[in-house]
Length: 448
Ligand SMILES: Cc1ncc(COP(=O)(O)O)c(C=O)c1O
Image (tube, rainbow, N blue to C red; front, side, top):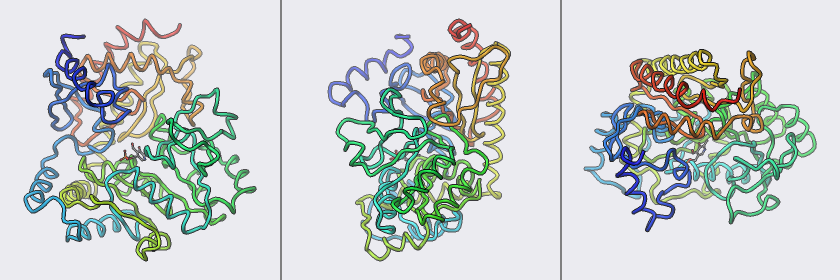
């Protein structure tokens, strides 16, 4: 391994002396086999500093729906860079983008732009509390809404401390956060209507918002059960609770109009980031006038030096140009290539007797290896955080490292991102690598 990654190893050692942990985001510290250093990306491929080439299913952890260095996005961004990086004022591209988002996204009557998904989530929570005069927010166990103090709870809680499955405790993910009682958060299990119905029957009038990833992308890409999102919508309306869809991953990925377009459910507020600008730093808080109007009226604060920086907005507009082209043809292409990869993985696992869970959508899906599975019985889908713990993370880590060694870059948590630049030949090469990892690494490790 060391000769394949010699430069990355040396760079990591050097970085650790001045960069905390050698990385700029804790998530990257968990990369397998260790945090590699990259030199350049093009389309669906990436090259590391040692000259190794990878088919990339990380895609910046979601933004690069059009692949690395998409020419139209780069051109639009560079053209704007020549005209200025930041005006700290309005510019014409800004309303061009807000009009586009408003036309495309069902709930987006009014829009504001920021840089990161985390801060847009922060804005949504503030709006919901201001609009309702209530404090408490409901979130779901295993869901991620950014790294800020007000919401970084119960993403991957330790079961020994997480309480009852149906009434989980709300646990901070990081030292330094407020304790759960002061968080004004309630954590419930995802995909479980009776529990939320029961909770709201008692506490509905005290809840400001329900925030949810409409597909639980950050844990096992769990789809909503049939009727679940519809029921959430109805319950929130009934108790006058603000329904927030966090579409930082699903937005402009699951469909042009995100999960809300895909499932045809209109939330009150929504958050976009990542795929909206194919790698340029921009996020978007959008929603119904009833709520966003509080920002417009100056009653609810929203700010940021870098909000709507012109190069990023230009990149977003160019991205939407491509996404909207030919009535969104790109979504059919990505879905079909992704589906082919999903079914190929299942087929190879079945052939080699390796229990596997493959679930999600062609544009984003999850792969995991169950800890135990009765021979001959199909592996169960994962439906919430607790059932995701039935997956063998250690084994998946070995799988990831072996795949990276073979030139396929994937995320240790199990989610795979697809782009418009992934081709059937990428899929074939990926399946070739998987076949060899299944035969050489996994078949020896899988419990009999
Ligand atoms: C669903 C979801 N919400 C919010 C965020 C936070 O976005 P950002 O990393 O841009 O702050 C993420 C990041 O991965 C996310 O997946």
